[in-house]
Image (cartoon, rainbow, N blue to C red; front, side, top):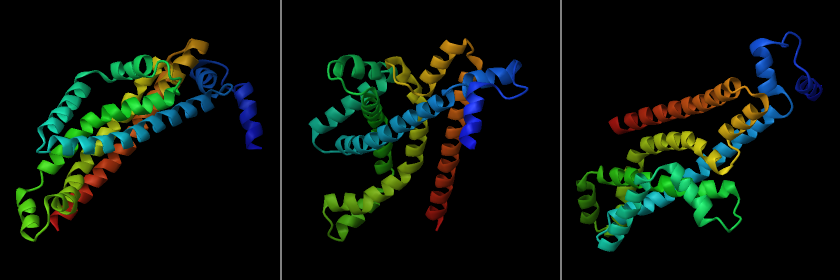
Length: 242
């Protein structure tokens, strides 16, 4: 029954929607498979953000340890990586990955985008983790060594848990930024939400409804993520005060 109603709406506007804004909404969002196209674009956006963030967290954590290492070459490599990533616009990085590095491999665009966002995120997350580690009082290290723990065990068992806890709010905020930045992947033809909106605009010659819809979706997702980040920060402050 529901499918029958939806198929009817896709073929013709509901009664009273024959003109004005309601017509534009039907023509841009409900007609044909355009709603499904936007949902597919949202799913691609979510995949790029989530998997890119996962790669970025692993890479960033590794780079943070390298930057804090006593071995000078590791510090230089990590510092150079962070400098390059933070100094080159994300759009340029994505295009380099797609049109230069993976130009002849035939790798799916989605996978290229995930790799590009993961590598880029790693440069920023590295600084977040490094700041988290440095925020732990040096007395914690001395306490670990005083009870007979090695440097590596002190870092693993005492310093890192506190550093990750300190870095969590910033990591969530970084993910919010990463989610919004996924809008650039349309420049290499990936059908994310913005690319789908532009595709619909090309068919209907109406940019208002598709772009406003995408903006509302981004805003809603960011609001939810920001709310979760706020709750996380309040919970961490409560645990610190105990």
